[in-house]
Structure formats: structure tokens, C-alpha cells
Length: 393
Image 1: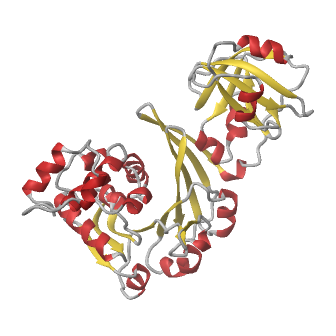
Image 2: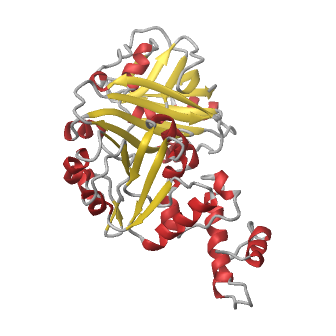
């Protein structure tokens, strides 16, 4: 804990560089290293977990635990999706962000964490937050679960995604290994919720996990943050997949069945009338494999089988993604350079032969615009098109 002197120093130096404080000589009642650790941690969670940042009595762990923890917005999203009930257990507690926001969903919760320092820190923070319904356990959570006879309404886990200091994402490489322990888990509950890496293969996930009821692809500001799945004992229906994106202070969601993953959007034909807009579905819809079915429902056509650019003549106000108005399509390098002369732009490449950096150099273009975009994509006949566009959403 920090004493009052240390808290005051922390408050007045939150935006100060404190890297030299780790070597600063302590004074009576003041540990500069301890304060520096907390200041650095708070800088990292200021935007990620704002309500915790504002509480000066909370303490934070080393940077790795901060990086792997859920953000406040994704924790709140989980709380809106997970069921309510009496008993809940989190097998991989970490910093305790998820369980703290889930504490209102259940009467009794158990937080498990094998790292003793992290576990004690979380226990202290739960007390500061007044979360009296969370019990903490330090040790191997799998053994803890095997050796007790309690039935839980829900079991939650966020398997560690590091192995020999390398990031991993396959189920069998994470700890605990869900594939190995799922039979034991079903003896303790009828509902399992798991947080997974954005890198996980959703198609393979469905094949390897029986009773998979829901998949949630969660993005914040169009960046995929995590995959959340729900398993229900003996469930045999279709798997539902929800693409969720938090943007401009609100969530947008698109729900479909995984049986529709194979739906293909109609392709753009060379002889079709000229199109006015290019549409790019948000990251969650793309990651969920639902781009084609979503855009087909919006009456859009796709540039080619492997080029995720979608075209339409109508302005879709509720489209979940980015919209670009087409100014012109270029047929020569000279015309392209003339259009972007002295005008900064950004480049988006979809199934193009080269990456954006190559085209910046080739056409001698300037970076730095959030409105003017050069969009490059390949048609079904392998022809590459260049579009000058203006982003309107």
C-alpha cells in the first residue's frame, strides 16, 4: 500500500517522467521505486480502465499483466452478455478486471490466480472497490476445481497466451488447455465462457469445440481486441456469431449463424454501371467471416472473390464500417499524380500486388489525411484498379 505521503507524490507527478526514480534514494516513509511503478502503471491504464485510474487507492501490477488485462469497455461488454446467477468462478483471474465488472451478475464469485503477488494485489483491490462477494484463491485453479464439489452457474477462463516468452493463440498452446480440461469443467457447470486471442481461427474453433453456442468478435474503434465464446452443455443448435464494434461511444452489432459463413456476395461485373461508393465492413465483421453475407444484405457487390472491396450506388447511413465516395478511377499514372499533387492522402490496398508503402513511393504521394484516400484493389480478371476517394463515414 501507499501511505499518504506517497499518494500525494503520486497525485502531483502522474504526468512526470519517473524512470530515474527507480534509482532515487528513499526518504523516511517514501519509496520512490514503489511510487514510480504505480505512476507508470497508471499511465498505461488511464484510457484502458478509466474508473480504476481515478481511484487513487488502487494498486497495479507489472506491465505484462496490464497489457494482457481486459479493458473497461470490453469488461462491461462481457457483463452485458454473460448470464446472471448465484455462483461464478474465474479460473484465470489476472488483474481482476473482468470479475470485478461481472460481480453484479452473480451472488458469489471465486477469483483464482496462481501468481501470489498478483492474487494478493487483486484481493486488496476488491476490498478497496467494496466487492465483498468475491472470494480469492491463490494456486492451481484446475486442481482447485477438481477437488471441490461445488456446482457453478458459470465458469470463465482467459487462458494465458504466452509460452516460452512467445505469444501463442492456438487452444492447445494456451494455459490452461481448454481441450484437455473441458470434460472436467462440464462436471462442474452447464455454461463455460472463454476469452480468446483475436488471432484464433473461428472456423477451426467450431470444429474442435462441441456445444459451441455463441461467438462474439469484439472490436474497439475498429481494432479487434478479443474473441469471446459461450459453450453450453449438450447444446446442439446452430452456432451464432456476433460481430461487435465500439465506435463513437456506442456498440454496433451484427448477428448471424455460422452456417452462413459460406455465403458469397455477388461479384462486380466489368460491364456493370459505374459505382458511386466503396464500402469496407468493420474489423469485427471481417474477422467473423461475415463480410460477404452482410454486404449482400446491403445490396452491395464485391470487387472479386479475394478482394474485400464492396461497391454500391446508394448511401447507406447505417452501414457498419467505412464508406468512401468515388471521385474517379485512374487509367494512367500521370492522372493519378495530378489528382493527388500537393494533397496528402492515405492508401488502402485490398488484394493488391504491393503494399501501401510501395505505392506511396511509386507515385510520390504524401501521407497524412483522414479524408482523402487512394484505394487499390484487384478485379476477378487480375486487373488492378486505382480509385481516388473521399471518406464520408
